[in-house]
Amino acid sequence: MKLLLLATAALSTYALRAPTRMSVAVFGATGLTGRECTHQLLERGVPVRALCRDPAKLLTPLGSTGKEDLVENDQLYKYKGSVTNAADVEKVFEGGDVEGVIISLGGKTKDVGPTMLTDGTATVIAAMKKYDVKRVAVVTSIGAGDSKDQAPFMFKMLMMTVMSSIFTDKNNQEALFTDGGVGRDLEWCIVRPGGLTVEKPTGVINVIEGEAGSIARADVADFCIGAILEKDFPYIQKTPCISSVGGTSWVKDRSAAAREGMTA
Image (cartoon, rainbow, N blue to C red; front, top):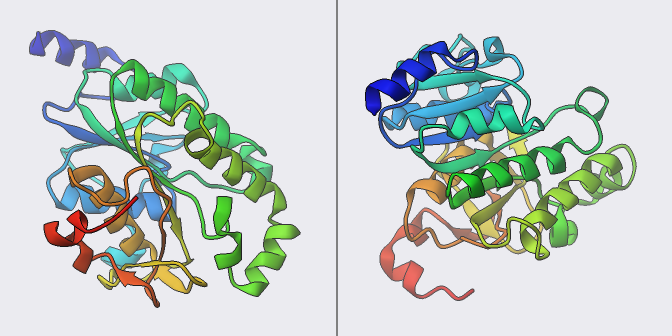
Protein backbone atom coordinates (compact mmCIF):
# COMPACT_ATOMS: atom_id res chain seq x y z
CA MET A 1 0.00 0.00 0.00
CA LYS A 2 2.82 2.43 0.90
CA LEU A 3 4.54 1.74 -2.45
CA LEU A 4 1.29 2.36 -4.27
CA LEU A 5 0.81 5.70 -2.52
CA LEU A 6 4.36 6.77 -3.33
CA ALA A 7 3.99 5.78 -6.95
CA THR A 8 0.76 7.73 -7.23
CA ALA A 9 2.40 10.80 -5.70
CA ALA A 10 5.32 10.60 -8.12
CA LEU A 11 2.92 10.90 -11.03
CA SER A 12 1.08 13.86 -9.53
CA THR A 13 1.55 17.34 -11.00
CA TYR A 14 1.00 18.76 -7.52
CA ALA A 15 3.82 17.19 -5.51
CA LEU A 16 6.95 15.20 -6.21
CA ARG A 17 6.54 12.86 -3.27
CA ALA A 18 4.24 12.09 -0.35
CA PRO A 19 5.12 12.32 3.35
CA THR A 20 5.64 9.01 5.13
CA ARG A 21 4.83 10.28 8.67
CA MET A 22 2.28 12.59 10.24
CA SER A 23 2.47 16.09 8.83
CA VAL A 24 0.98 19.57 9.18
CA ALA A 25 -0.67 21.31 6.23
CA VAL A 26 0.06 25.03 5.87
CA PHE A 27 -2.15 27.23 3.71
CA GLY A 28 -0.64 30.66 3.04
CA ALA A 29 2.88 29.27 3.40
CA THR A 30 4.46 31.92 1.16
CA GLY A 31 3.22 34.79 3.33
CA LEU A 32 5.43 36.29 6.02
CA THR A 33 3.70 34.44 8.87
CA GLY A 34 3.22 31.27 6.83
CA ARG A 35 6.96 31.15 6.13
CA GLU A 36 7.62 31.29 9.86
CA CYS A 37 5.16 28.45 10.49
CA THR A 38 6.75 26.33 7.78
CA HIS A 39 10.29 27.02 8.97
CA GLN A 40 9.59 26.32 12.63
CA LEU A 41 7.70 23.10 11.92
CA LEU A 42 10.59 21.83 9.80
CA GLU A 43 13.05 22.84 12.51
CA ARG A 44 11.07 20.63 14.90
CA GLY A 45 11.27 17.73 12.48
CA VAL A 46 7.59 17.93 11.50
CA PRO A 47 6.85 17.27 7.81
CA VAL A 48 4.99 20.14 6.12
CA ARG A 49 2.55 20.05 3.23
CA ALA A 50 2.31 23.55 1.73
CA LEU A 51 -0.16 24.68 -0.91
CA CYS A 52 1.17 27.72 -2.79
CA ARG A 53 0.06 29.75 -5.79
CA ASP A 54 3.77 30.04 -6.60
CA PRO A 55 6.03 27.53 -4.79
CA ALA A 56 9.09 29.55 -5.85
CA LYS A 57 8.00 32.18 -3.33
CA LEU A 58 8.25 29.80 -0.38
CA LEU A 59 11.35 31.30 1.20
CA THR A 60 13.04 31.11 4.57
CA PRO A 61 11.61 33.72 6.98
CA LEU A 62 13.62 36.88 7.44
CA GLY A 63 12.67 37.09 11.11
CA SER A 64 13.93 33.70 12.26
CA THR A 65 16.78 33.22 9.79
CA GLY A 66 17.86 36.72 8.78
CA LYS A 67 17.68 35.82 5.11
CA GLU A 68 15.23 34.90 2.39
CA ASP A 69 16.38 31.79 0.54
CA LEU A 70 14.39 29.14 -1.26
CA VAL A 71 13.39 26.49 1.26
CA GLU A 72 14.98 23.13 0.53
CA ASN A 73 14.06 20.36 2.94
CA ASP A 74 13.30 16.68 2.45
CA GLN A 75 10.31 17.05 4.78
CA LEU A 76 8.71 19.91 2.81
CA TYR A 77 6.12 18.90 0.24
CA LYS A 78 5.07 21.75 -2.05
CA TYR A 79 1.80 21.77 -3.93
CA LYS A 80 1.00 24.32 -6.62
CA GLY A 81 -2.59 25.49 -6.63
CA SER A 82 -5.28 27.75 -5.23
CA VAL A 83 -6.82 27.53 -1.77
CA THR A 84 -10.23 28.24 -3.30
CA ASN A 85 -9.99 25.22 -5.61
CA ALA A 86 -11.30 22.07 -3.94
CA ALA A 87 -9.24 19.69 -6.07
CA ASP A 88 -6.02 21.58 -5.29
CA VAL A 89 -6.76 21.62 -1.57
CA GLU A 90 -7.68 17.94 -1.41
CA LYS A 91 -4.34 16.96 -2.99
CA VAL A 92 -2.67 18.24 0.18
CA PHE A 93 -4.66 15.79 2.31
CA GLU A 94 -4.30 12.69 0.14
CA GLY A 95 -2.50 9.89 1.92
CA GLY A 96 -4.26 10.52 5.23
CA ASP A 97 -1.17 11.66 7.15
CA VAL A 98 -2.17 15.27 7.94
CA GLU A 99 -2.71 15.69 11.68
CA GLY A 100 -3.37 19.43 11.73
CA VAL A 101 -3.76 22.54 9.62
CA ILE A 102 -2.48 26.10 9.85
CA ILE A 103 -4.36 28.70 7.81
CA SER A 104 -2.44 31.95 7.39
CA LEU A 105 -3.98 33.46 4.30
CA GLY A 106 -3.44 37.00 3.11
CA GLY A 107 -2.77 39.25 0.17
CA LYS A 108 -4.05 42.48 -1.30
CA THR A 109 -7.75 42.45 -2.09
CA LYS A 110 -7.08 43.66 -5.64
CA ASP A 111 -4.88 40.60 -6.18
CA VAL A 112 -6.78 37.83 -4.38
CA GLY A 113 -10.36 39.13 -4.42
CA PRO A 114 -12.69 40.35 -1.64
CA THR A 115 -13.75 36.92 -0.36
CA MET A 116 -10.60 34.79 -0.67
CA LEU A 117 -10.12 34.37 3.09
CA THR A 118 -13.65 33.10 3.59
CA ASP A 119 -13.85 31.03 0.42
CA GLY A 120 -10.41 29.50 0.90
CA THR A 121 -11.03 28.64 4.54
CA ALA A 122 -14.38 27.05 3.68
CA THR A 123 -12.63 24.92 1.06
CA VAL A 124 -10.03 23.79 3.61
CA ILE A 125 -12.74 22.97 6.15
CA ALA A 126 -14.51 20.77 3.60
CA ALA A 127 -11.28 18.89 2.89
CA MET A 128 -10.55 18.50 6.61
CA LYS A 129 -13.93 16.91 7.14
CA LYS A 130 -13.50 14.63 4.15
CA TYR A 131 -10.15 13.38 5.45
CA ASP A 132 -11.13 13.43 9.14
CA VAL A 133 -8.63 16.09 10.26
CA LYS A 134 -9.76 17.92 13.41
CA ARG A 135 -7.15 20.44 14.58
CA VAL A 136 -6.76 23.83 12.86
CA ALA A 137 -5.21 27.19 13.74
CA VAL A 138 -6.45 30.19 11.78
CA VAL A 139 -4.52 33.47 11.79
CA THR A 140 -6.78 36.52 11.47
CA SER A 141 -6.09 39.83 13.23
CA ILE A 142 -6.71 41.96 16.26
CA GLY A 143 -9.90 43.85 15.51
CA ALA A 144 -11.62 40.91 13.83
CA GLY A 145 -14.82 39.43 15.22
CA ASP A 146 -15.58 40.62 18.74
CA SER A 147 -12.08 42.06 19.29
CA LYS A 148 -12.74 45.43 17.63
CA ASP A 149 -12.32 47.32 20.90
CA GLN A 150 -8.87 45.80 21.40
CA ALA A 151 -7.48 47.44 18.28
CA PRO A 152 -5.49 50.68 18.74
CA PHE A 153 -7.35 53.85 17.74
CA MET A 154 -5.50 54.47 14.47
CA PHE A 155 -5.91 50.84 13.46
CA LYS A 156 -9.65 51.12 14.07
CA MET A 157 -9.72 54.05 11.65
CA LEU A 158 -8.03 51.91 9.01
CA MET A 159 -10.46 49.06 9.68
CA MET A 160 -13.37 51.36 8.92
CA THR A 161 -11.82 52.90 5.80
CA VAL A 162 -9.08 51.48 3.58
CA MET A 163 -9.17 48.05 5.26
CA SER A 164 -12.93 47.68 5.51
CA SER A 165 -13.23 45.05 2.78
CA ILE A 166 -10.37 43.04 4.28
CA PHE A 167 -12.04 43.00 7.69
CA THR A 168 -15.39 42.05 6.22
CA ASP A 169 -13.64 39.03 4.77
CA LYS A 170 -11.81 38.29 8.05
CA ASN A 171 -15.06 38.51 10.02
CA ASN A 172 -16.79 36.14 7.63
CA GLN A 173 -13.79 33.82 7.80
CA GLU A 174 -14.01 33.67 11.59
CA ALA A 175 -17.77 33.14 11.45
CA LEU A 176 -17.17 29.82 9.71
CA PHE A 177 -16.10 28.62 13.17
CA THR A 178 -17.58 30.94 15.78
CA ASP A 179 -21.13 31.59 14.61
CA GLY A 180 -22.33 28.05 14.15
CA GLY A 181 -20.60 27.83 10.78
CA VAL A 182 -19.46 24.75 8.91
CA GLY A 183 -16.26 24.48 10.97
CA ARG A 184 -17.88 24.80 14.40
CA ASP A 185 -17.30 21.14 15.32
CA LEU A 186 -13.58 21.16 14.54
CA GLU A 187 -10.83 21.66 17.12
CA TRP A 188 -10.17 25.22 16.00
CA CYS A 189 -8.22 28.11 17.40
CA ILE A 190 -8.60 31.55 15.87
CA VAL A 191 -5.38 33.48 16.48
CA ARG A 192 -5.72 37.27 16.54
CA PRO A 193 -2.25 38.84 16.65
CA GLY A 194 -1.53 42.48 17.38
CA GLY A 195 0.71 44.56 15.13
CA LEU A 196 2.93 42.15 13.24
CA THR A 197 6.69 42.66 13.03
CA VAL A 198 9.47 40.84 11.19
CA GLU A 199 11.89 40.06 14.01
CA LYS A 200 13.58 37.11 15.62
CA PRO A 201 11.30 35.13 17.96
CA THR A 202 11.24 36.71 21.40
CA GLY A 203 9.48 33.91 23.25
CA VAL A 204 7.18 36.54 24.76
CA ILE A 205 3.63 35.58 23.79
CA ASN A 206 0.86 37.05 25.90
CA VAL A 207 -2.88 36.46 25.62
CA ILE A 208 -4.46 39.85 26.16
CA GLU A 209 -7.88 41.24 26.98
CA GLY A 210 -7.04 44.92 26.57
CA GLU A 211 -5.56 46.92 23.72
CA ALA A 212 -3.01 45.01 21.68
CA GLY A 213 0.62 45.89 21.16
CA SER A 214 2.98 44.34 18.63
CA ILE A 215 4.25 40.80 18.22
CA ALA A 216 6.84 39.14 15.99
CA ARG A 217 5.46 36.90 13.25
CA ALA A 218 7.88 34.26 14.52
CA ASP A 219 6.11 34.28 17.89
CA VAL A 220 2.71 34.06 16.20
CA ALA A 221 3.97 30.97 14.37
CA ASP A 222 5.10 29.44 17.68
CA PHE A 223 1.61 29.95 19.11
CA CYS A 224 -0.05 28.43 16.03
CA ILE A 225 2.23 25.40 16.14
CA GLY A 226 1.38 24.92 19.80
CA ALA A 227 -2.30 24.94 18.84
CA ILE A 228 -1.66 22.06 16.46
CA LEU A 229 0.89 19.92 18.28
CA GLU A 230 -0.13 20.28 21.93
CA LYS A 231 -2.91 17.84 22.78
CA ASP A 232 -4.19 19.92 25.71
CA PHE A 233 -3.72 23.34 24.12
CA PRO A 234 -5.81 25.68 26.30
CA TYR A 235 -7.32 27.84 23.56
CA ILE A 236 -9.16 25.28 21.46
CA GLN A 237 -12.48 26.70 20.26
CA LYS A 238 -11.38 30.11 21.51
CA THR A 239 -10.26 33.34 19.87
CA PRO A 240 -7.16 34.55 21.74
CA CYS A 241 -5.66 37.94 20.96
CA ILE A 242 -1.90 37.73 21.32
CA SER A 243 0.78 40.35 21.79
CA SER A 244 4.24 40.65 23.29
CA VAL A 245 3.00 43.49 25.49
CA GLY A 246 0.69 43.10 28.52
CA GLY A 247 -1.71 40.26 29.18
CA THR A 248 -1.11 36.78 30.58
CA SER A 249 1.96 34.81 29.52
CA TRP A 250 0.96 31.87 27.37
CA VAL A 251 4.46 30.43 27.73
CA LYS A 252 3.92 30.08 31.48
CA ASP A 253 0.38 28.80 30.96
CA ARG A 254 1.71 25.85 29.00
CA SER A 255 2.06 23.94 32.27
CA ALA A 256 -0.55 21.27 32.94
CA ALA A 257 -1.50 22.93 36.21
CA ALA A 258 -2.25 26.22 34.50
CA ARG A 259 -4.31 24.52 31.82
CA GLU A 260 -6.40 22.64 34.37
CA GLY A 261 -7.30 25.90 36.07
CA MET A 262 -8.61 27.58 32.93
CA THR A 263 -12.28 28.02 32.23
CA ALA A 264 -13.96 28.25 28.85
